[in-house]
Image (cartoon, rainbow, N blue to C red; front, side, top):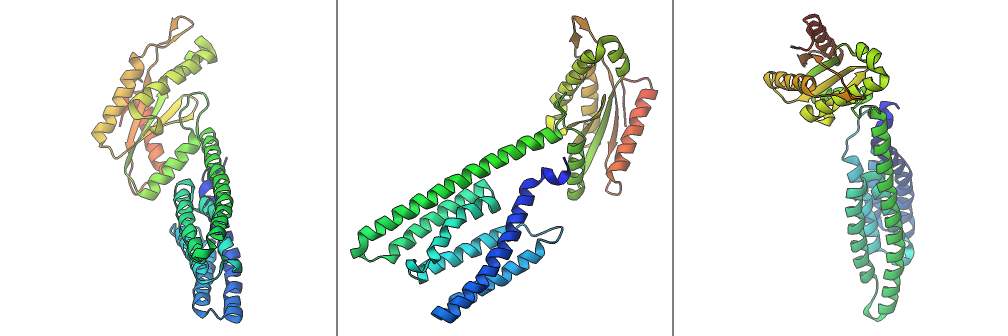
Length: 333
């Protein structure tokens, strides 16, 4: 799975924003023209045309590699205000009011389930008040009928939209976990490491990289078989997770792992590495009633703003090789 697929929520929101800005923006031009020619609502038409121009601007922005995250909120809010204003200014039978029914879908797709839920409930309450203003006191029965019909339709669409978004996010998270998790050990894999590197680089964050290799792992596989080797790998990861946290442990391949530690001093990073080394050495690993002695060698390096991820990795690997050359079961920085 490619990196872009792991960020499918952002891509979906961008596509929705692009489609909304093009489709609804183009329709807004026609609405503005209609308000000028048919009902002579010049002020309302002016606001609709401003929305159309903003939509065109957002559509052009979606073609760029980066886009202002606030556009989706501005787009949602401005379109909402236009429909609310249209409901207040025009009779219900003109049809502007019925645009309200599409908003739960837009909110959930564009804003996510939390902001989408708040926006959906807020618009529902506002439009219920708007309905009340559309009727005289003598039209009480008509008002109640209108409110009930609107409520049933709006709530049904909102519930379906909410359920869809929740299940979509859950499915996406499961796929993301499968794509970034090593199935044997439960550690994060190389793809997850790549994303973490990119995040740290974008944030220009300082971090320490610990590269760990199990000593004489081939001999373990030869003597105890691959099943015994798998037990050793799982035990080593469990110890690393206990010390450094599951989010920071990555399997690079075979018996080699790495740990990324953010916002930590060099002294503390060495202390973490030493705790991991001692923990693995002192943790009994039993396979088929036989004890398997396990030690690890660890190379530690500190990030520098001038170095790319590959250079930092090379330095950590060099320290790891130095630890192995120095007799193994060591930490070298």
